[in-house]
Length: 69
Image 1 (tube, rainbow, N blue to C red):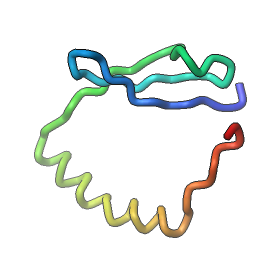
Image 2: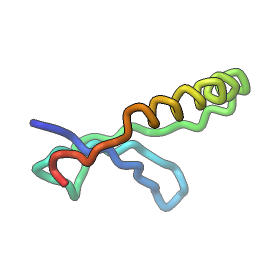
Image 3: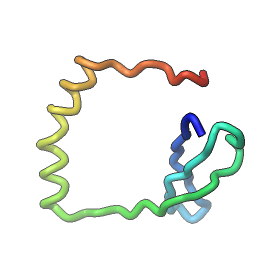
Image 4: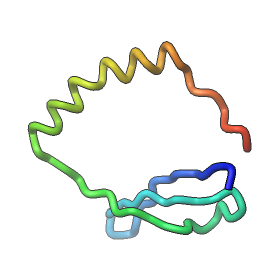
């Protein structure tokens, strides 16, 4: 496998999963991981502190198109 595709999957009940796809079958995920909402205020503050670093890194290293597109 040369690469994988990650997608957020939303179920009819509103729950979400992270779908893992390979380059041979982009229609059906070969695995999925449930996404759980974490409302812990300590974690939210930590993420807010990381946001400026993330934005700075995005400016320095802009995303490039994946090789399969």
